[in-house]
Length: 47
Length: 208
Image (cartoon, rainbow over all chains, first blue to last red; front, side, top):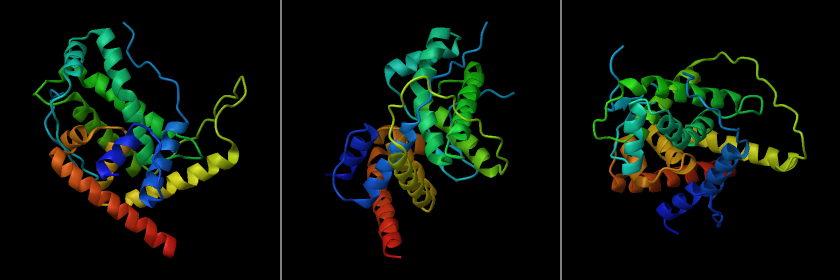
């Protein structure tokens, strides 16, 4: 798969197969960043 | 206070040049309404951008004591700064997202410079069963993610920013290029090199 397509797949949070160490690490980072998602907090000031 | 415009922003810490781009018409319209003070538009605009900002800050700052509180606080600061700057924002034909990531880059740099780490609050106890990954999977994921951060930190600034914006924040090659002041073609070449460099670093570490 071309680099652009692989990165697009990672960006869309789609599973990317293969044994590429760089892709695996980026996938781990994405999973970690997304894994502890916090509820959205409204920051619009009250009137 | 001077008006905030969308021009290029130089990140003092990383040297990354953050340019701006033309955005999707709906987001541009949303930005225009938000600048005029439309509360619904402001909510929608920040709702669209906030997840990307949170991911960017988490990828750059990582966890402290196993939690993302610091990164999430910085992301919140970014959103508040964006909100504060909205009335002074002037559309110069460039995308609002670039302006936002310019602010995010500066806030992250400030946080990285700061060695002060405040007390980290713990999460509330859940009311129900935890549907998330178990402790072992969580630890493995954490270690791999931290390894990724460590290797990304060894990449040239532009390559690191490119991969984080592209993969973690989920921007397209075109969007990433507009944030970094590169053409889409240049982004595709650079991302290929960045990935190759990351792969090389990972392989060198596995041998050592």
